[in-house]
Image 1 (cartoon, one colour):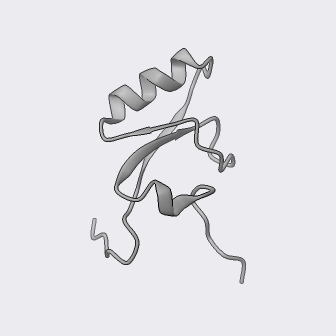
Image 2 (cartoon, one colour; image 1 turned 135 degrees about the vertical axis):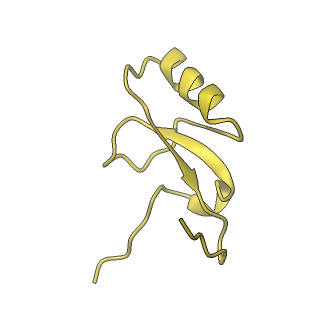
Length: 64
């Protein structure tokens, strides 16, 4: 079974929101604690429709 990886260098982004160019892209453009600021910063970098999501901290269970 292939390993599921949200983003490259994910250990650096635990507990933060990140922006990537697409759902398939694993390279982080921008990270931060406020999703709107992350989105706007990615737009300023020239990405028309950035994908913003939360990277959970390592070894923390997320219940939704």
